[in-house]
Image (cartoon, rainbow, N blue to C red):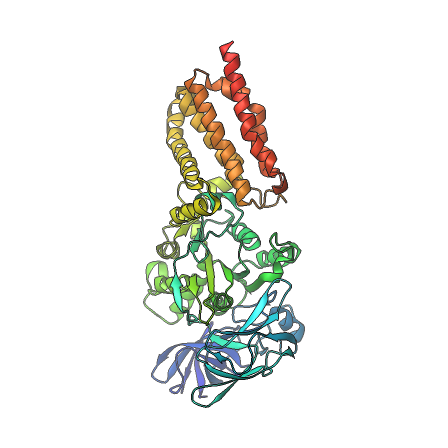
Length: 591
């Protein structure tokens, strides 16, 4: 540990001299209060330190002591259902310890509870040969999540002792004799530096879809388990609600939700809503599989920069157990603003719009840690991390640097649209500007596993929406009466797809989540109606006759989104009813 002294304070940036023995990324204790900081630049014996706490009152001459270790997180039982700040301070216990609603400076508190006891059940016996990633035993952390205790990185050898029973995260639970004769004494907890990705055995191509229950996403712009998606959109377009919906209903084992620089009331909504929500897959509260990281807009800006890395490191830890994990970052724009502020105080050469020149590589570094992988360990298990990042471009301008650098990396773009949001069409994902590069692979995967022709139906529905867009220009110029009956039918089918299928109410208990079977039944109804109506036009029926004769059944098709999953047969029956209604129109015409 080396000690220096403060020579300059510039907001969250502190410069200290006499630090020649310190290293980049070392954690320091800054000033008489012992604030937590991280060295981000070295110039001769001067270290520039970003401080993760409020620096008001700190003055030159106060001491700076380095710990010699990088910013790390504690990984072990006690992560699930907990709420941390950007540098993994447990906010509930912090509040109790300080008796304050605000972060008191200089208070040191371990991330994982040192007093809680966990029941450890060994899965290996003494004498077994183990290596990095092997599962030694399990702790039932919540009713839903079994916490798998793994051999830490760079540890391998012969298991010479392992105990069952109740332990704290600091108690020695097992001992491994390594090749050099040394004995590693292992606990239920391990530490990992947040800025370094955890190693895997092999990277794999993601192929299984992440089912979110949001029809516009699952149908037109799906993301794989192990994929990466961006949700850019202006203020009020619904980024946070989209992320909340995915956090609540996605078919993953664990959700990490990072509130990075967002408003405090949005994190309050999460805290109030999530414990009350029941996970449709497990029947338990969603908090039983959720880790929250809150670094709201009134918290120190430097910790906002660390929060993203804290979240992805916890996600990698659960991936290494063989779980599928989704990490929500809301919002990466606020994280980029923290980068810009620190870069400005370091007097670095600014890039586009004042962001640092390394903005693109930092964004890429984060999203590249997502993916599907065969993890370390002799059992060859697989895990996935799906990264979904909200982007808040100023004024909704997606040509700004954070959005553009994000879109270079991710393969899914859910573009939120202010005009759609103003028309109360939610989720306000624009079907003409959004895209998913996983669409073909997921379509083929669903066709194969579900034995259906889903990919061709999705393509057809999208073609109808695109055709509507080009017809709208003609309608604006010369009116709808100038269109042929065939084109007017296309406009009507597109309207059904938009209003009856894509529009979804996040606050309705039934419509908030739609399973794949229900999505397929609803889309089939619309496309089958389109087929029958086109046949009727070919046989001489008029467009107005078809529309007037099918009002009742189309109304029921529109309301089918509010029919629960248990009554799926009622939705499927509407296809036959629509066919019969059109046949009656033709019969009347024949008379």
